[in-house]
Length: 143
Image: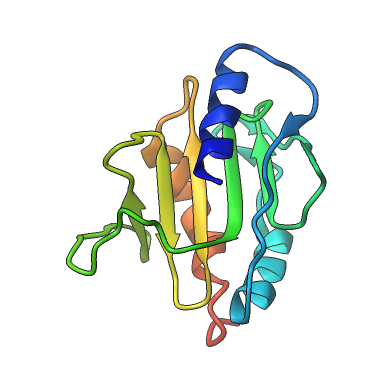
C-alpha cells in the first residue's frame, strides 16, 4: 500500500494529468466513521492546488493538484513508527514523518491513521497545517 502512495507521487511529478490511480485503504472499526466524517471536511483547494479525482473512486482517498498531494484515511499504523517516536505536532494534530520517505506523513488520531503524500512545489508544513484542522475534527469526542 505504501508503494501505491510512492507511485502516486512519481506519476504526479512526471506531469500526468487527469484521474490519478491511488490504492484505497480499507478502514476498520471506528476508523470507518472517522474517515467518513473527514471526507466531508476536506478542502476543495489545498496549498493552491485544486481537488482532483482518483481511481478507483473511494471516500477514503482525496487528491489535489493532479495527485501531487494525496490523502488516504484509515491506513494501518505505520510499520516504521515506534512507540517512542516523537510526532510533529501541527495545530494540535500529531504527524509521523516517515524517516525513509520524506514526502510521506501520517496523522495519528485516536480514531484513524491518515496518510498524506506531499510532492511537487508544495511544502509539507503548509499542507499539513491546512489538513490539521479537518483531521483534528475526526475523533469521536470532537463535534
